[in-house]
Length: 460
Image 1 (cartoon, one colour):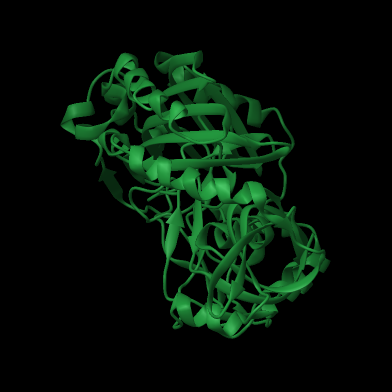
Image 2 (cartoon, one colour):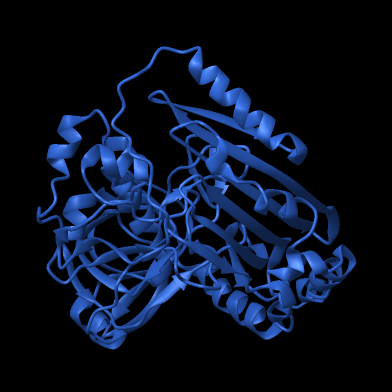
């Protein structure tokens, strides 16, 4: 902590929020350093560093919330006084919100030695350019896209109940994308890497070449006939499905003021196969979903959304938790200091099962399909996911590549049609993009799980 006790940190740690006459107030500070590099077809398109520093204040008084985001740290006390004055000019509203209790002091600074903010943009650009020779080594490569993105964030929080914390977040990612062309046949694919340590992104040449060696097999692949199939989804596919189709439905703010939604999502209801358990937790270090304490001071914990097929929980802020008579879960998050925190996912995944991947393939049977990689996906009561790669399964093994546009289905039908879950597990992270909700995009999250077998999924 001593290493960062300077400048704005000294000012905010010495500020006593208990001295302000209001029901509750809190302060969130975020200092971030981001870099982005993009090279297309060998030409540098962009390379930039973007530092930012600011804070977000919340005041709850006379039954209402009042917010302020700004960058002038000397004016923090005045901003709080102004919000309190504003509240005193407004009618009192009946609001049953009870300020949270003191959650203690937590200082979790882990990335000072490997922080990407300490690496020059020139070194980052040199890393990306080191992969340019691969363009001439990948057969049938028509277009190439090399991307790099990173972020270091130091977050500090305190509230009038006494809670305070500081933690840092560090990530870097590299992606080599390309379009292969053979005659009139095109296939777009890419290899992505993620790490909390910049040095791990070096020496990936062999992995990238192997990835595109496999990708060229799809140039001659036949297209699957539309219909319902037994399918095996890879951990990456499972993660996107879980996030898009069920994770968002578990965010409790969509239920407020909607009795029908509360009735549909009643705790204890059977919503999936008995072998299925879905979790959300921000405690996974070195992932893009790492959020050890949320933006109102609630520590991360393992939240079961589904346990053994039964609806067991949902994601909450303190506000939504109190409104529904439940407990806060550590899922109050904002994209950055300019936004108010709302209910958001962290790392969302299906827990591993008891079958080996080989057993899952055997159970799938001949003619089933295996999907890996995701182009894009959308969810809700129904979902649609466009996979990157698909394979026919035969004799308990991957047989030949095939082409598929999308898979789709009903969320609850799919959850109940899960027949097997493998004992492998992969929590997928990404330094590119993130989750979007209520104009807050992109928020870093992670998702994943084991491979799963689903019966009767629509394939087009």
